Image (cartoon, rainbow, N blue to C red; front, side):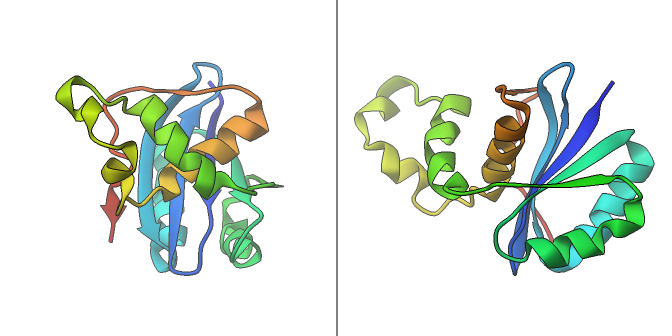
Length: 145
């Protein structure tokens, strides 16, 4: 098994996914306040066999990487250009509109959604050059406060 953490860094919040590369599955997806990220990753690494951490190279990337050096895991910085924009389209691939909702404009469904975890997924997918599926019904908007 080859589990990785992918992070879309930000000043106030970060998107994070935990995925299994060999299975191409996402096991956890959250949005977390940046101040809690270090402790969350520490607990996640204790519970899971994480091999790598992939961090987007955008806002606060350097600070996030510095906070994660404790892990002694390989930390990879990867391009995250346009991931927030692309997350909107990826949202509908993961959660297709069904039934009569199809008549409502798509933008209505993501108007106020936080897409940071989906941005982290896109960073992971771009790095691995493959698409991932959800292990279970994961809510990518879940906040860990």
